[in-house]
Length: 287
Image (cartoon, rainbow, N blue to C red; front, side, top):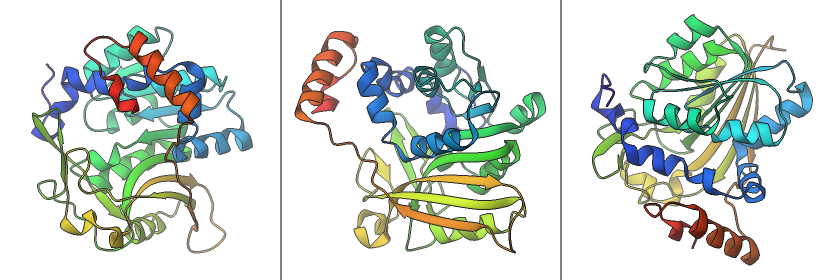
């Protein structure tokens, strides 16, 4: 197993991590596409391609896991120049096995390695990676540095209360063995931070509200267990370029990205997973 500098990152090398993050690979393609395009960050990615096109655009995915975003791009014929990066050697090996024509790379914990070896990309895409960092703002800086055009990220946010950056107080249990950071960022703090970046011209924020505390092994500040904190699964598009004024344009929309399957789709998916998934996997997640 690869050794990481912090025990907070060691769980990404666990075999269970690869199995759980490969969940979508067992979905039939129509339902996979339906679910993926319900995610707000994928909606933002589609909007980018509609405006700018995909051909000849370069794209980095930081935290690519087992490569399911690459699968999505190929199925939708978004023929951008894709490279996927992850600190999990096991996840990268799984991605390469599934998609031998893809470009997947195992990296160290610092994304500076990507910048030094591959420069910048037109689009940088990163789903739920910022929240698991011990240095959230520094990691966000490194993603912005990688970006020539647009950075699209998924994170967890709160409307009320300051961001808790202490990973001992805001964390998540993984695979019954590890604690990992789980940082819920205050939206106003995020906007103020990005406003300080002179090369950020526009920030689009899509929030899907829901209580974060008390689910999936999360150990969070107490107020995040109640709706008054205004917690959300949040997708953000950060566009770089020249501003029209002193501050970037900020657009905030509320849009649920919680999928509600029809009875037909639910039955199809459950039968499909029962047939396709290995015996060690759990098809009961569909119910």
